[in-house]
Length: 120
Image 1 (tube, rainbow, N blue to C red):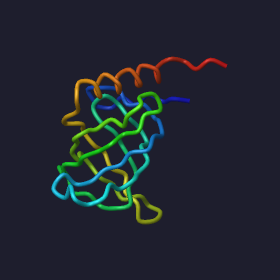
Image 2 (cartoon, helix red, strand yellow):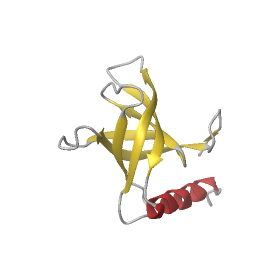
Image 3 (cartoon, rainbow, N blue to C red):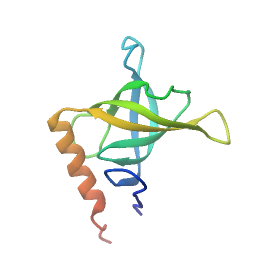
Image 4 (tube, rainbow, N blue to C red):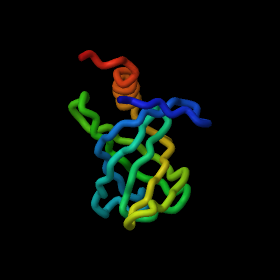
């Protein structure tokens, strides 16, 4: 089931699990860190990570959608962060700042499919 989350956002968010990789834009030589998306929209994502990230920290992200043949590359910033009650994990809200027109089109197309009711 896909739940639509609206709140104060410009674009709706959809509860959906996807793999994402990220790294700090200031340390591009470091390896990507893997995480799991909890919800996604045209304007950003919420994911769970194992490290604290400062507010407004800029990230380079690669989002692996099932449909396109290549990962979507995104520049984003940390909008909020919350420590989860169990373990050493953080829920991180990210706002998308920049992505190619092609990647934006792929993301929008994928989100449109999430809106459609599944058959069966």
